[in-house]
Every structure is written in C-alpha cells, then in structure tokens.
Amino acid sequence: MRLTWFGHSCVRLSGTKDVIVDPFIGDGIEVTADCDIIAVTHGHGDHMGDTVRLKKKTVAINEIAKYLATKGIPVEGMNIGGSIDVDGVRFTMTPAVHSSWLEEGGIGCNGGAAAGYVITMDGKKVYHAGDTALFSDMKLIGDLYRPDVALLPIGGRFTMGPDEAMIAAQYIGAPLVVPVHYNTWVKIEQDPSRFKSAIERTTDMKVAVLSPGETIDL
Ligand code: NI
Ligand code: MN
Image 1 (cartoon, rainbow, N blue to C red):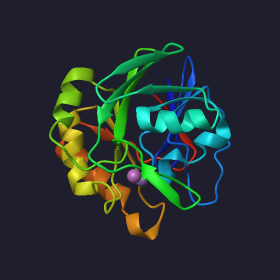
Image 2: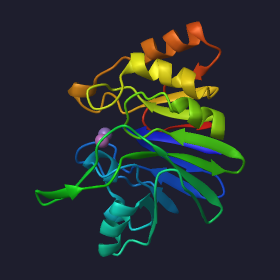
Image 3: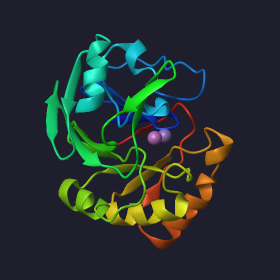
C-alpha cells in the first residue's frame, strides 16, 4: 500500500483500491486526485471538503451519510465501533473527541459524532485519528487493531497539539506516525520536526514528516 499526504488531513491510500480520507487540502484548493472511495471523519468543512463535488462512493457516520444521500452521493453509513467492507477495503470507525457540524449556505446542523478510521487494505492497517483531543482509549485502538501507521493531528487549538500527540503515538504504538492537520492556517502552525525528534529520541517509533503530495510505501 502507498500513502500520499496532500495536505491538512487529506490522505490517499493506494492499493487494491484508492481511498481518500477527508478531501480538503486548503482554502480555495480543489482536490484533483482520483479515488474509488472517500471516507469522511466528521462534518466540518475542512474535512467534508470536496466530498459532494467528487461524487465517489463515500463512507461516513449515519448523520453525514443521510446528508450526502440527499446530494446523490452513493454513501455507506456506519457508526462508531462498527466495521464495514467496501470493495475489499475494511473501514472500522473509531471514536474521536471533537465536535461535528454540517453547514451549507450559512445554515448548519449537527453532523453527529466526530470519528476516526482504521482502514485495512492489502494486509496493512492505517489509523486516521480525524480531528481529536488525546483520549486514553487510543490504547484500546492500538491493542485491538495494531495499526501499521497512525495519522495524528498536531496543529493544536482545534485538536491535540504536538505534546498530546506524542502521548497519543505512545498509546497507539504504531511503528510509524504521520503528523497531519497543521500549518494549513496560522492558527494551527506547528514545527513537525520538533514532534519528530521528540518521538524518535524517546521511543523506537518513526515519524514521517511529509511534504504536500509526498508518497511513502508502507
Ligand atoms: Ni473538525
Ligand atoms: Mn479540522
């Protein structure tokens, strides 16, 4: 499996299928990458992104799934704790400590709970935490699913920052950590190299700080 980080929380996992999580890269920037399946972690605009425009088979929590169905999106609804198989890719929805809001034309509604995913494809498991605070059940996610990679937000303000994400990485125990959700805006500016050196100095985990568009092999 290959993993490409496009920016913000947007990654593509490429293997048997191409899966994009949270198709938003930055304000006014279209996601042009192709995929078979989209997974949305929660309703905020910087995660829903181009989901409606891209019109792909989409995995989302029930409340967002209902909204997307009204837009003609072929959607697979699910909820936290459950797993589904979509065209040979397994999606397990995990908790996230965050809020969720669906907005269109200045009018909004609650988007259900915020979530993350463990995505299993071609024998590899990727944990995308979504937007979240640190929570101790990340240990359970690590014990249950043993992810090969953990994608963790480090931007602070709206999610955990680097100090909390360091503890999250240890709770999850994935051998590889990829920081996401930082430096998209001034309000979430962080230095990912400090996060990398702090983890690699104190644990045997590796941190891959990717440039937007960069791909790594898992
Ligand atoms: Ni959010
Ligand atoms: Mn966000």
